[in-house]
Length: 389
Ligand code: CTP
Ligand code: MN
Ligand code: MN
Ligand code: MN
Image (cartoon, rainbow, N blue to C red):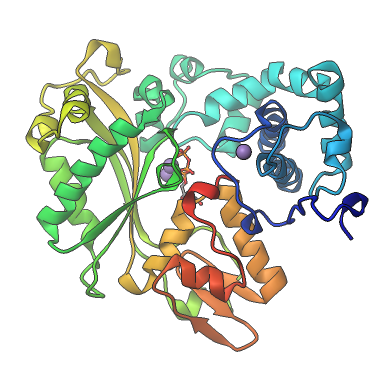
């Protein structure tokens, strides 16, 4: 039964992977508020609550119009009492007291600042908060013990806070392509994450790398990072080996959304001149790769130098898993989460960035394209630009 018996009323599907969610939508004034509450729940280690607010926000992102009255929410899925209360208050008063007091709270602001440091997760940030630390400077001042990632995170804090532009991502793409082809001709490189979904800025740049001949991709990552390091293009890198085994990661294993590809979390040294060149014509990587002069080991201030630090994620996938890896690394995070939930709850299948397992038939379903995976899952294909759930 349609709302009000009106057959023209749009029916909002309840899983984000059943809906088209464009990047630009009509309800940011509501979704930003709900996402503050989601983030705050995450900071308080309440995952269920965090996902509930995020799902509510996501439904509003998929609406083809701006919400004007509470009646507009009738028949929408995923809006719990709490979310509805917050929305109602914003519609009536222009803002929600709970959201505003959360936003202003010392805990929220501290957690945001500390988890904003590369290498710092919620647990570490929470411990520091409870010890009285409030800012990145406090960590340096009090001489906190930091791992290598966190040291790099502090050293390049200012740069890594600045959004990465599409123009910068394109220059990084050229560099990564050059590096990969230098060490493995015939390899294929694909831009992933937010930029594949059409975002104009991101917090990092994500790449997926494969080779059409299965097996050629093995051990590729150290070769790529060595090449980049020799060119002086890497400020930081940590590579993790591929640990995927179908037998172990299959049905016997409890679901885990962390994938097991060979991957590298890195920080690139990007010459600003290369980005300027690129927007004129095409930059040669020679322009890009001269890094050179020794930097202070302390904090880097990019206004004073010709380069900036950029977070880059590299992932290597065997060709046979490439479609799954592509789907899994395009995001958004909520879209991915909803795809896995749909697969498990509605289809008795288990989806990861490596494979799709059908528990009823007891077999792995092979796929060469994202379209095939949506089809196996009984879902309409949603293009990357509409996965901004
Ligand atoms: N991802 C993952 N495992 C991780 C981190 C990320 O599988 N440990 C996947 C996410 O599910 C997402 C994609 O990689 O699909 C990109 O993640 P991320 O770079 O964090 O987010 P973006 O959507 O690219 O957003 P941003 O522009 O902020 O980078
Ligand atoms: Mn629209
Ligand atoms: Mn990203
Ligand atoms: Mn990433």
